[in-house]
Image 1 (tube, rainbow, N blue to C red):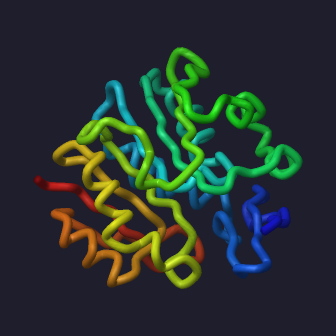
Image 2 (image 1 turned 90 degrees about the vertical axis):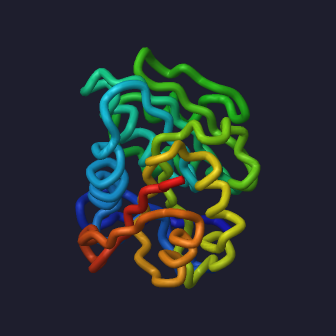
Image 3 (image 1 turned 60 degrees about the vertical axis):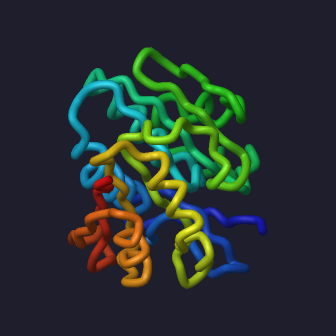
Length: 214
């Protein structure tokens, strides 16, 4: 599937897959959604210090870039693991460049190894199934669950995938996602997560934040 570039309502770009009728980020604002869901409601809930993040869906790289900028600004050290089954081609990620420092470096960094991109941020991009991401069990502080919507790719929201998220998180670790589907929330609770529904980003009524209690 070849994605098409789409300008979202906040002036940032996302991608659209015609075959799935699905976008990588919200049409109402790609950057706004990432900033709100994954940073404001996720990263900013983690105590300052060294932080490890696991992401399902590197996608456009926007979440990783915003986290990298946040780490620089707040002088945090963040180790970022991200799994992507279908990496973008260079011609595509260049078209959606948000004008943020280090965009090319982020995308050109090697897959399958840790890349120390600056003093505050290291990135490990894994090309493959999220469930196989080589992250130490119970070492992540935060999971960004940014897969395609359940209506488009239902299998990635079931227990076999969520078990990887749970196994990777420390006790008290947090998972955030734009999704607020009831079946997904119940699956999280089956694995020991305490879930809460929060107001969603523009265009979405709700989102989920979940904390793992072992």
